[in-house]
Image (cartoon, rainbow, N blue to C red; front, side):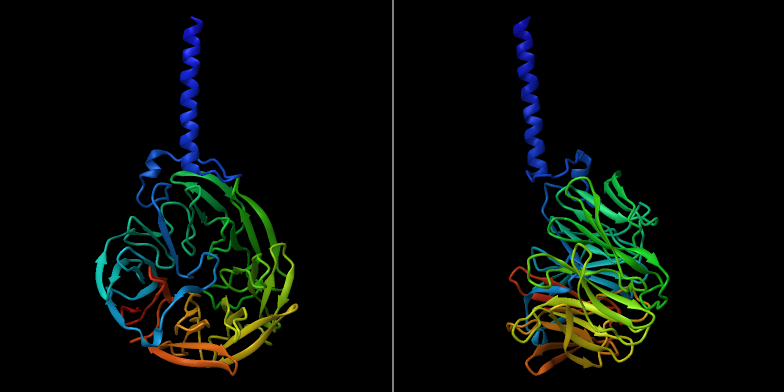
Length: 448
């Protein structure tokens, strides 16, 4: 009888060892990683969540998951070939990701219909995508998995359709803003966590390399400018930890009288110390908009000049080595709705100093939640990064760089219509870049 008990014990221990081995293989060995039970039906799900078994790629309308609109790679954009893709309606959003054969391009039309194409060696072929329709106000995130295209967008749950879900690859969870303002963590149909963050309804959920989340919170109507889709702006920025049990790590309240006029910060290492900073546009009724850099503890470490009058906006675009000697600079557009001026800033102790400016450009249409109509990248195959920004009439894109003499316009790209979407960009397998936009002529124009 005792021998039988010992045999049973060995069998149970062996089964336990197998279970532990499988759990480690599926969940990784990161210290502090939350244990998440992933049922088999989730691992086989095509669209509703990520899985551990299949590599995937994500693409955002704002290019980088931290909100910095910079595309990696390089191209000679002004000499590039282009192709026009005919759509069945007017596009609202365009997003692209690399594929095995080239690149996938997805357009969300003004009725929410979704159309997808693959560009390979200059040839365009229509491809299937799921879902086939989303809310037209929802900024899409494109997922490529097994060389198939899927969109992350508000779906069956009570998500805000003015934002988008994101995915945490390490745990298989999706995260979204509920209409209540809560931040909800879900594995398929199972809610795993909820945080009462009081999110801005159209906030973008930014991610860093540790899968922390940064978003705008504290909706307020104290500053009724209303050029970004509504008169609701943010009064705080919230940092969320997700590595173990999700928790609010920090709430940064902006100075009294100010609001964050935007839908997302830019979350990047601006001063070169290896730690991310948080760039926002603060606005008030007396002085208008100014750029402000916070550290993650909520301290203001630098700020720039105010617009000078209330209800004058600054559109922060990107943080990148734009400077003549490769200095890290901020690019923005001051008053993009009224003779917009492109500006390049450098950090000078606790001040953001405008190094150069050039008027006559825009980056945003009044009333739109599309803040991704200008981007940065290496668009002439040299060592400096350039800014790609629309003209005031949105009929052309302008390539410009900041050199020793100031802002130099390198050339213009005709769009064959009026720009009606964000500027999409994708880094291809050979480190080259493709750029695409949608116009009111119901086309996507892609340079490659």
